[in-house]
Image (cartoon, rainbow, N blue to C red; front, side, top):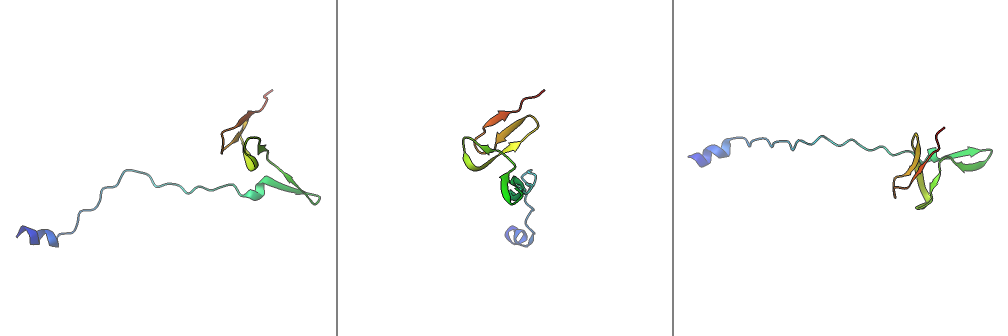
Length: 78
């Protein structure tokens, strides 16, 4: 009788793992790295000296940092 009683019962809900849902990462649009002045294209951010072309340094308050290799260049403060 116990085998038929368990077959009609609804399964117990799974316990949550306790993790928060991940936020979707929004990347910086590439068009913000360039500026057009009088028909010439100029870069608005510095490129990483280790990684080379195409990898730009993030601008912080007191430093420039590469997110790929970890290169850091500190700005002089007055």
